[in-house]
Image 1 (cartoon, rainbow, N blue to C red):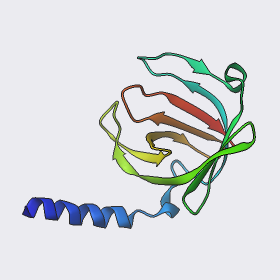
Image 2 (tube, rainbow, N blue to C red; image 1 turned 135 degrees about the horizontal axis):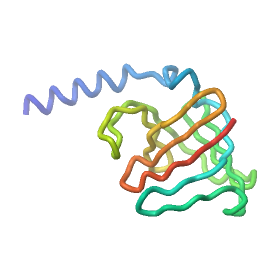
Image 3 (cartoon, rainbow, N blue to C red; image 1 turned 30 degrees about the vertical axis):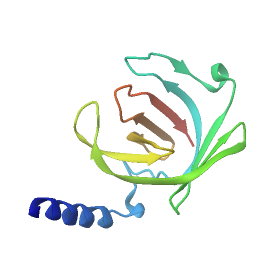
Image 4 (tube, rainbow, N blue to C red; image 1 turned 180 degrees about the horizontal axis):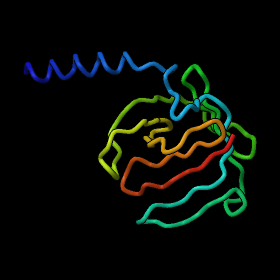
Length: 132
């Protein structure tokens, strides 16, 4: 019981100490408009999808207020909250920056001033690549 209480207290301290202002990964900020360039399936489901092959464009906007707005062919289809934090990656069991939105969690594989690559944090490990 004491270990559980201690774990909850420590988890609470670390989770409240992590600010959305510190979401920079490799000098980039998630807050911006990102245009979908392509998605690549994982080992169990290999595929490549692009706006041309999928037949639609996709854009996501991460706001400073912790919202993500998703557009398909310039029509808003979702508006939900997102959270960024540290966590363990499924594929390598190492600590990474993770982002959760629309009911899924992703490893932030690459984030700089022009590029965002996120990888599904599950067995499939599908990768989505966005550009500013």
